[in-house]
Image (cartoon, rainbow, N blue to C red; front, side):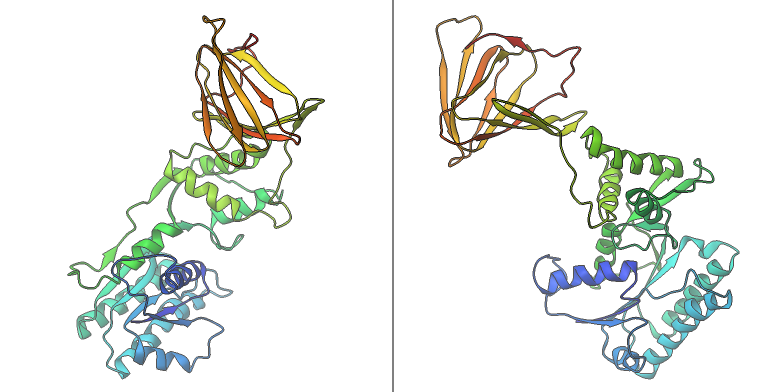
Length: 381
């Protein structure tokens, strides 16, 4: 299969090309797409003469090229209608009635220059489909967001993510405006489904099912909370798919010299204890470093529970039920054999470094530490 992608260097185009390359290299699988495919990329940097050859060879066309922020108003029609007309003329020349997907916009129903130009491109394709029998997929996309989207151009999400990560001001004229958004990975997945041409298509207009409507102010609040999370250590609530996708998008706009951030290490003569990640409903993760010969702990909990994982060094973790003063349970642990130890409630416990080097332990607890309700009681094992 030879797939022609116009606008291959645009936001959607880059992501689609990347996933098709993954399929070619078998880093990603799609049951209905063979890895034996050719990607014919056409963009502003491509020799125009190649379009004629591509239109002759193509088995499927993703028509993603378009104009949405021109210098002059007339460029809307030239880019969104004129180029589509040129594309179809070349297909007719070669009598190539391969399926075509076109990237349109929800603004195609509006009375503005951009919307009119997108609607004109749609109508041209509908007429072409009726004349040639070519299968047609018209997608009227809402606001698409995700990695590689150009900020300060035509995406509020991209602009907010870029400006907030770079400590630049943002402008929100009306936080109560409803935004309809769709994530780039969902768009790409939907477009790849178009290649399953064995299915009988009965419609021309399509949409991505995972659209999300949310107020502009709520988007800003979420993005600002992502930035603050480096200080609070609280990760977002990923049970909400939109928050998960928006956070991934936010990270893609981090300045390249700010991928890392420091943690507060609580250091004393015994070693250190450092909080790493906190979650309102999943507890927190910390890293404990113990010096040789050092024992830490000797406490128990009513409800709070923990998991310990020694990743470097060796030691012993000891338990005793608080109502059984003489029965001590001992587990030997080592970074050479990774195993998790559950710390049951009602057992006082400690951890001792038995090695000659620092022992590093990853510790998870099911709730964020609350100094007003620590649920931690000292008692020697």
